[in-house]
Image (tube, rainbow, N blue to C red):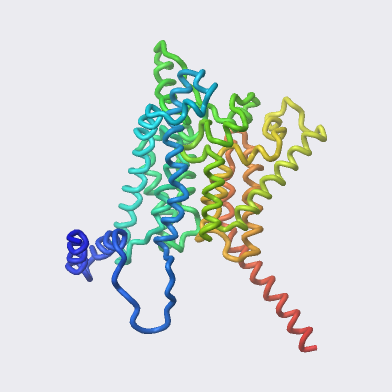
Length: 405
């Protein structure tokens, strides 16, 4: 009660000043505001932007916890490959958790501190309330980056993503690009060696390679992902069950298809995520995979071709590899940057899945295409909605003419 009263006193003290948005944000984040509507029409509902953001965060927490364990597991498994013989028995250990927390939690802290700091600065400068949109972005960012990304790189990328991808458009609800993917795109194009390859996905592998280059006599730590192996026409060392449960290298939160599936069902059940976008994205990915399988079966692509491995892979395997499932569930469904019409969501999702598989197959240097596919469809989402609405208007005009006649 004392803290609440102190915050309320600070809020009243700075009312009308430039610092008011900062204190209002802290006060309403911790406590329910006591302001009520006294006149005019209004709707009383139990959900608001903050509750919606918290629902998504709850769906992301299992991926974060699993990613912490997986960071430690992949490090120790790269040193002692025998641990992979029994992944479940060697996964949930204190050693894995401690090492994973030591590497993952700093990414979460930097993401939130820097991102919310930029939000507070813009709120104070523009004299508007601090919005809750970054609550989800701050959790998504550490889940979609490699484990050993330098913190200063993440800081620069978060500042760029929040300012250029969000604030210049007017803040939460006005941005046309997903802020988390904008941050990842900046990292990929600004620091490509830290976002791809076989060293960045396992903790210690980058430092290990530097010591090897300097002539040190140490064991090699490598962590090539399944997509990286297939893109190089290598035989993956991980099974489909490893991919489904998540015992594979990759970005922090994208490896466990099982937990992502549960998170998607939770978002659908709470009506926060669009099931139309999720389902159509899956269909689009499967259709593109089937087309590639047909091309291989027809003999149009030979085994020596650089595209062969990813084209030859059974079409449904694409849903288990890389960040496709994570992107479909948590990013394609972003209500701000996605399409708003029900029919438009089917087109939007289908094209995301379709292009994700297409990009990952035709670009061996970057075998993960869901980021680019979602960002591209973010740009075209308003166009899709426009034509859906215009199509409905034309149908109504035709029905009107028939009725009048």
